[in-house]
Length: 208
Image (cartoon, rainbow, N blue to C red; front, side):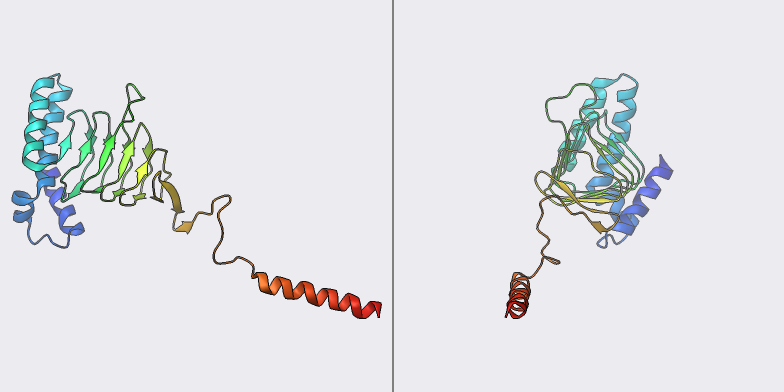
């Protein structure tokens, strides 16, 4: 537990330029408190102390504004920046070294049973206000833009944007969609028309 706490504080120091000291992070950052409380609640949940687990979870929610169901699985070095309004569902899974901003929901759609919430890979960033819904997977090293609504699986090393979210980059390369207008390499219609006129002139010269 101490080692987990120590490396999580180090992750906050690395990711948050406003963090001035380890003591400030430990005592004043709600994300640290929420995750620490969750680990205790999750232990109770796994040992069938469901009421106690829920009580710990709800107390943490009141103190931090971050609601993590005790059944959720959270990896190492999770950084929650600001944190207010975050909701993480019962069957959600979060990998190592993730960064989550305020207003994020890892929730369900109401259509699934059993595994109802998303699985987030390692080193994933989820922007402010994003919603990731259903038993889908977000691959390692991916980025979810602020206020996006993710309803389908996101591959590794991707960037997803929009409502509903779509992948716009994979491994740093832009993704072209069927039917999407290419604003950069689109042909110049004036040049095309001039070329057609030149061709007609050449044909007329030959005829004369």
